[in-house]
Amino acid sequence: MTLVEHYSQYIHNLCNHLDIKVDESYALPTKSTEVMVMQEQGTKMYVDEVLKTHERVVQVNTLSNTFSHIYGRLICFFGGGFQHTETDFQARFKTRPELEGLLAKINN
Image (cartoon, helix red, strand yellow):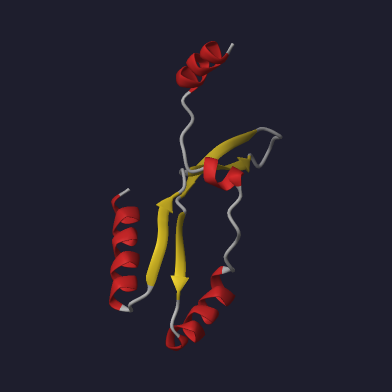
């Protein structure tokens, strides 16, 4: 987790150094992906590795002409931005089943 926080600090320091105004920056919940492997002499699969993906959203408001070319090149390699929907907004938060149960009791 330390590496993720260092990346976040790096992005903030880079934006401050380049005078790029950041509107919003937040981390999305960690996603785990299991890599399954099939045995050579069988049909049974087992988990070989668990890959953890950490995502961070950095929303930039204004970008100078000098850095727009560099930013355009980065988009070619890393993909473009996207419009946030309500689902994207809710994905930022961890679910709390006990709290949702209490809210359901209050609303009924």
